[in-house]
Image (cartoon, rainbow, N blue to C red; front, side):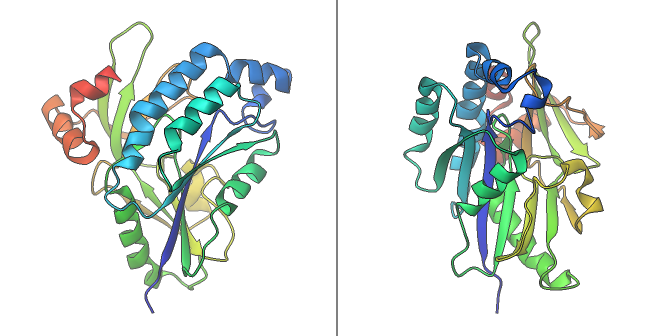
Length: 270
């Protein structure tokens, strides 16, 4: 019998938790003040609305569910903005969580979309300021189906990473730069865990750069699969680990049009 897939993605949007972003602050209240500062929220909502969300809406295979995990302490005007963006889309869920352990919240977010009759789950992650190419869902399902028979056991979970993509480097003082990249370690953007439907684990369980220490890992570089933004509010310091800046602007423009439905000029203007 062929495998069937329940595909679920989870995005953290300004998620307030004492074991993730709040550990950089003196108190949870101080973390909340920084997370929900007007300038920061304007940047995050802008990138989500202009880059991240459109990339998911233009998927060639719409059969997946997206859960956006956010904070129940987020000011109502921002929470309502998020709700309005997602409301028209039946496969998207906005879920505010109270402060709790980071991984506990993420497990609950994936659990909001349990498998029904599917044999396997494909669980992917994405940051709210990044994007995926238009065939990401269909390609991940195809790869998962092909890789399943190669596993030591039908119960063995395995990971798929997408290591080729494009960086948008934004500065508050200089023009935006766009660079192609082919990474040598898994990125967070789109990395997926394939597991039996009633199995355990999700792609947030371990640091994405170290997934090969914990799961059989397949790295796909067939197409530029991700758009990753580098800006002044990145949670961690982004590191380009691999071949970077190998392509001309015309080649990048062609890749953006084909895989992301936008031109180089349009990406720089975001």
